[in-house]
Structures are given as structure tokens and as C-alpha cells.
Length: 267
Image (cartoon, rainbow, N blue to C red):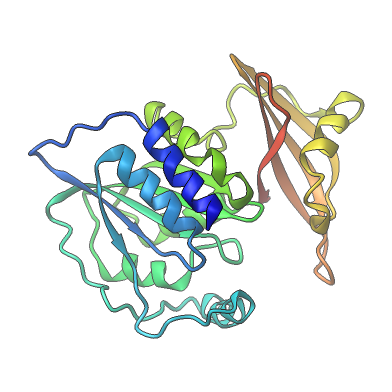
């Protein structure tokens, strides 16, 4: 609770002033279970002047996150939505729809599937944003794009839950940029090379809190930009009894700061 208050205070300090016009409105639609995505949705709404709509399930998930994952895992496996109290929404007055969610099992949660399949967003601009433990922006946004083939995806933003204290400043930078998250583009990276020496030092520093992923890096590409260095490591990952899989690990380092893990995406 204390962290959420700090984050909400940061929103007011860091967010740019927003002028509400009499023209088309924007809408932030989000599903949140633990409150993390709700905080991020509030940041997007405050910085864009958009209205907010929280998706509410007819039958709420259990308070226990483990029980929720067990139930939602079956729903995700069967590619079914979860009934919502406020499913049908008049989207006509809105220009841009911001859709936010926590990444579950590398994809969108069932309530979000219900919303996007039961509402026509053709002709609308959609900005996707999500929170996650280690990654899933690319995989989850691909699912949304498949469900909304006639919708313009204007941007994608994702942030790890452990970095939420930086959310306000990172959303501001995202909104002020080209509309694409840093992980969207593979342009400007060096040719892949063996991960060794200083690359491995960066990797070990950034992934120190992710031992459960059992990441083993073997190739890396690097991009240098003013004030930011990005590494994409190709790794093998194994979790528990799951088979080994190949993943891309995106690590960022802002000028004057320590490197941090931005996302992990299955290849």
C-alpha cells in the first residue's frame, strides 16, 4: 500500500500537463487482479486525459493469486473468455482505446479476451499496455492483434512489476516518443556475437533476481543510443520440469544507472 501511494504521488509530480479538448475522447480499459495494472492504468489516464473503465468479472477470481492462476490457466488453454458485468461498451465517442492487463501465462487474461471479442474496435487506434513478472509484451500483444485484425495498433508498452516505481517516467517517455515501446523494434542492433566478457557481466547484474528462469546466454546483440544501451541476449531457459526453451532477454541500461531486465520473450 505504501508503494502504491508513492507511485501515485510520482504520477502527479512527473506527468506532463494535459489539456482536455472538446473533440474525440480517449478511454483506458483495463483488467487488474492485484492492483499493479490498475496503478499503471491510472498513470496512462492521468497523462493522456483519458477516461477509465475497469473490467469487472461476473464471478470474481479468488483472492489467492495461485488459485486464480489455476483457474485462468484452464480458461487460457481452452481460449475462452470470462463473463463480465460491463462487457458491452459504447466506443463510438472514443478515438484511442488504451487496453491494459497483467500478463498471465505469456498472454492476455480471459476477461480481456471477452472484452475485445464482444466489442467492435474497427477503425479505432489501440495502445496496448501490460504488467508482468519477467515478460510477455510481444506474445500477449500478438494475441490481441489476432483478435482485432481490423484495428490499428498505435503502440505497445510493458513494464515489470518490480519496476513500477519508475512507471510514471517511463510512460511519459513512451507517450512522448514514436508510440512504440523500446522492445518493439530490432533496428539498430549489432550483428549477433558470442556472449562473453563485459556482456556477461551486464547479463549477470541484470538477471540476479530471476534465478528461477535458469537463463543461459549464448548470443548477444547491442544497440547504443544517446543515454541508453540495449542488449538482446539469446538464451536457453528452463523452469522446473518444463522443457528447455529458447528466449530473448532484453536488458536496458540508462546513462548513470545499473542495467536491468526489461523483458523475456519466447522465440
